[in-house]
Length: 239
Image: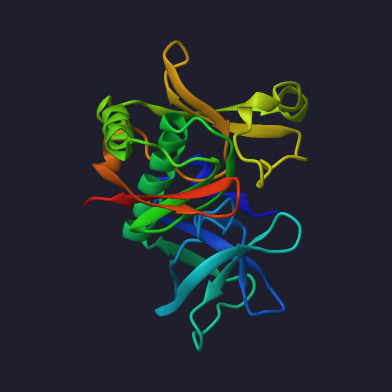
C-alpha cells in the first residue's frame, strides 16, 4: 500500500521515497506518494521523479492495484528501477490551483444547497452538476454569496469517522453519483468553518486549501441544462 503523503500535508512539495513496483502499463509505484491520484473529480498530480542525475517527468497519477498509487511518466521518459530511492517533485502551481477550485466547489454546494450529481476540477475552472429542475433566478446574488463566504477566511480542516457513523448519517453525503471512499473502516470529512460555526461538512478524499481566502475571487459562469432534472454550474478562478 502506498502511503498517501498528500493526505498528511497537501502543501508538501518534495519528498524522498523508494520505487516498489512497475505496473503493466508502465507506471511507477511508490512506497510513499506525494502525488494525488485521479479520483472524485480531481485530476492526478504531475511533476517529476529525480535520482542519480536522472529525471522522469510525471504526466499524471492514478490508482493502481489494491491500495497502491502509480505515477504515469511522460511518453519516452526513463523509469527508475525497482528499489531506487527517488525524490518526488510536485508541480505545485497546478496542484494549488486544483486545491483552490476544489474548496471553492465545496462552498458552491453551500450557496446552491441541492443534491450534487457530478463534478470536475481543473486549473482554471471547475463545475458541479446539481439536481436542479429550474435555473437559479439571480446569478449575481449567488456570486456575491459565494465570494462573501470566501472572504470570511474560513478554516478548512479534516476529521475522521467510521464507515458505520457515515451510514448512520447519510445527510453528510451531498454527491448522488460519487460515493465517498469507504471500506477501510474510516471516512475522511472535510469541514469548512469551525465546529461551532460550521459552514460545510462532507466526505472528501481530495486536497484543499487551509483557509478560504486562499481561493481568491471566483466567478460563477455558464449554467447549462443537462437533462430534465440536471443543471451544470461552472465556477472560474478570477486570478
